[in-house]
Length: 157
Image (cartoon, rainbow, N blue to C red):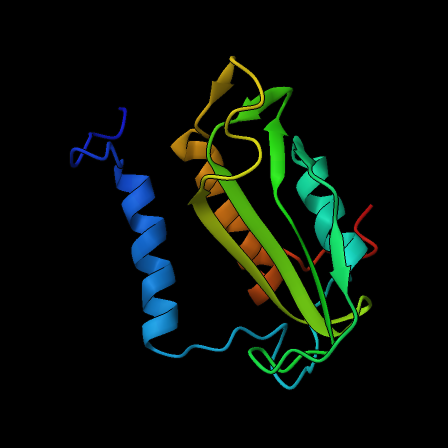
């Protein structure tokens, strides 16, 4: 059964669920951690963006800043946006960023949907990322931040 349209902005139930979950995390000041008593996320900058690309996204040029950022308390930030999904240009951008002590010791990862940006007018054949793919990206982010599904059984052939 397909998700029903909820309002004039054509947000589906999945869109609203993602937004409400993000709002709840911010409102409750939940600080995502890699695992109890661990200081850094379980992925490096390379691992994070490789995960995005392995899932069918092509990302724009990756910008990196090695400078203290008082907003998130990090000394390193890397950010970009996917420009296409499985060869189709994405109409509305998704902003992805990671931050931490350096590219191998990340403390946070961030994702924001529906930003109009450089991709918006580049090609006539563009599409808005379907809700299912937004949800897949959202699950990826949760996996990175909370280690959901990251533990692999070792030695079980």
